[in-house]
Length: 233
Figure 1 (cartoon, rainbow, N blue to C red):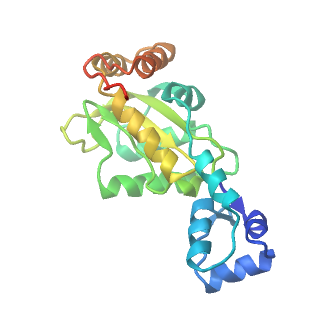
Figure 2 (figure 1 turned 90 degrees about the vertical axis):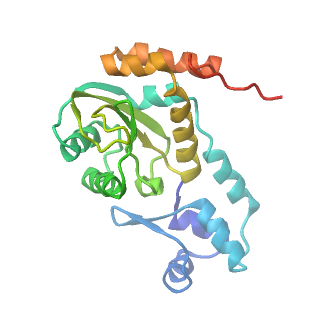
Figure 3 (figure 1 turned 45 degrees about the vertical axis):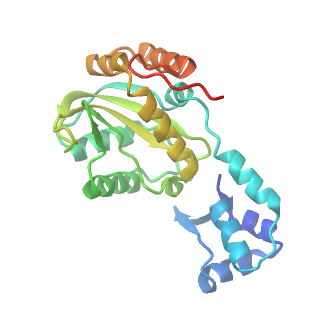
């Protein structure tokens, strides 16, 4: 969820000029995308409380609702599964991936590529067994309405500096509008990727429908084949 300056002003009960003045003079957090300013509702709520500015509780409730995400198999259907993705280096692979992401036209793909490359420079997102999860540390910079996960299966495995030293053949790209939603998706990915059969399907480049069906089965049964979640009491 993101707010325009006008929407933020309405929640705070002030005019747009006042919001812009607070950004410049009082440290109101703001994000700039394609020369437009956006505000994160949680950051806005925290800033208002800290600065004694009256703000509607409705803002926080709406922000929390927006952090809810659907099941991983639904996010994968939204983001797509791409086979035979080219590239012989991290940069080439990331560029090919960014080109395939279902982003709105106004998104700056070159900027996103730079962010992903910077994230890799800080430390590899390769998690082992030929799988990587490249992602931005601050997903709010994308300002999308709905989260999605895109899976790219590489034409040739590429060295990503993974923890086990194995080249990467499958990459899951997490794109989300808020940090809490982003973390929830990463947690779900971590769970389903414990499944031996799913990892074998990724290595073999199985059809998209088969991969998504396997993810759905894992989620609905809460059993990865090698790990079973303990039911909640």
